Length: 170
Image 1 (cartoon, rainbow, N blue to C red):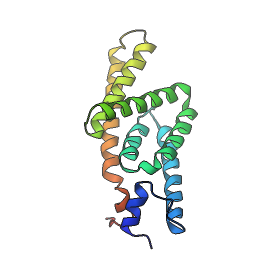
Image 2 (cartoon, one colour):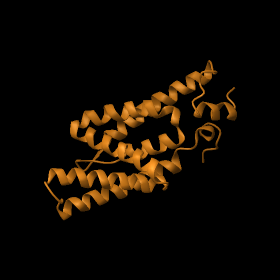
Image 3 (cartoon, rainbow, N blue to C red):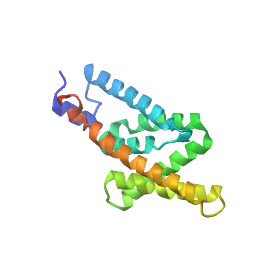
Image 4 (tube, one colour):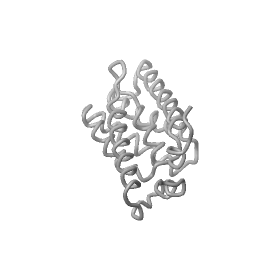
């Protein structure tokens, strides 16, 4: 039987001491996060890619550190299936998020919104050879707000690892 203490250690990456059920749980979680990140990176809404992978990455890095590599692989493959440009945008947003996270101590939704705005304004500035039109700025703002809302949603729905298996679901 897996105890809460075992799950806390597992969430910190100390999986080498576990055998049997614990390794199966770890494998299933890795497979789940790989699939979720793949589909979140591929999400398209009204013919525009939406920022669902970066908020998921923010939660994984802060709560599920032992699953960050499988999440990154799934998100990378998902972004590459949308095209090289989308892959570059997501990669730049991840790098901007990680850099902002190291520099400033702000809540995750604020860091995600800042990373989205900075990368998208720079990207659209290159595409439009200068400052993007007002309509594009509006789209970037909507994308940033959506990213912030998704981060809040993931914070509320993805429990800390030790509570994931032990909490009551209502």
